Image (tube, rainbow, N blue to C red; front, side):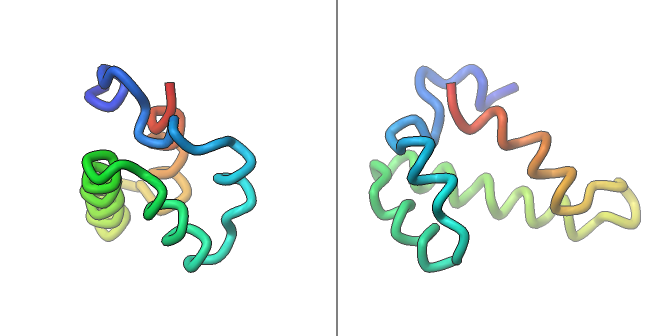
Length: 77
């Protein structure tokens, strides 16, 4: 819910094509470098949070795919 309340989505400054064509880690790193520093820092925090949640999959049933399905719609407006 917190991400939905932001005035702009974290990835709104990127085009959908840029995001969809970034399949390799190096491509994603390049995209993050295009973000304003505040959004890049928030995205870094969110990715770390998602990794922490996915690490506890045995307890919370949230694997990486499930976490992505919950967070992804909230990364853009």
